[in-house]
Length: 147
Image 1: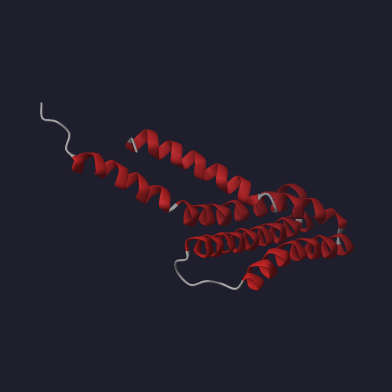
Image 2 (image 1 turned 180 degrees about the horizontal axis):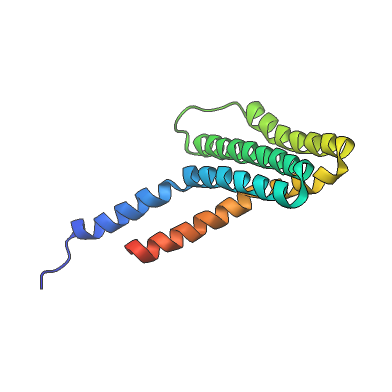
């Protein structure tokens, strides 16, 4: 039996690092899928008003996720002093804009159709479902491929 070389130990680690580095794009795709399936299910079960609220909540949640990802990357760049630095005003503005957008969406839906408010709140939880899908996928890949 020959001893393991450094190369043979690095290959699985490199494959795992490559797989896990693509988690955020997969979560974004899972968010889209959960949004479409959730909107369709809400339409069938509760009607179009709740489905519209769910779709609005899912859109706000997707924007929130995207902006949060950008803010974390900007903060990491500022801390590590690499890449292009973004202005702190822009980071804070996007942070506050996320909550203003959620509040505005809730206000509009509440005044137009109070029944859709529950759909909006359910749609805001789309990232949770997407992260659960990603976790299940990572478990599956880890077991199936041995990463």
